[in-house]
Length: 209
Image (cartoon, rainbow, N blue to C red):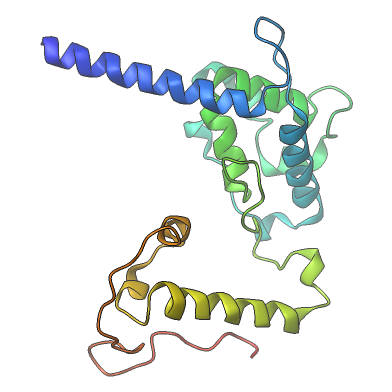
């Protein structure tokens, strides 16, 4: 029983520490004052808002499911955290604007706030690390050949430079790339890029090449 209580206390302390760290990354007001976002958080929210407004919903990544939002929000507040509603509201003007809704969410559960940003391509550093939609970003709309060239370079880096043409590349998850860049991966004997059954190419050519 004492062990269970001790483990629970450790888990609660770890949870609170994570909450404090995440809040410190987005808080622009002093402790004891009403919560307000810092400039970096507002910039990320502005980018997310603009992307949602200009992109058809069917091409956007979904937000966290309603049942995963904190119960303290209530049904009316949960209704504000949808792609449809974000398309309709102003960024920081009028009632129920995006900033006020996100302030309320961050105050109640900052981890859930970050999960909203993460669903739209932002990482814990508030950087848009991925494209949240299934459409190419606007800067590549008229530069498709450049985009394909960049993708080929990334593919070469992952397959050859990082994974050294080993089986590791078959199981590598995108989230592991940052960690892998810092490791000295033990080299396996090269097997090429074919499966074990019929020597079929595991890496189809990029569409449109």
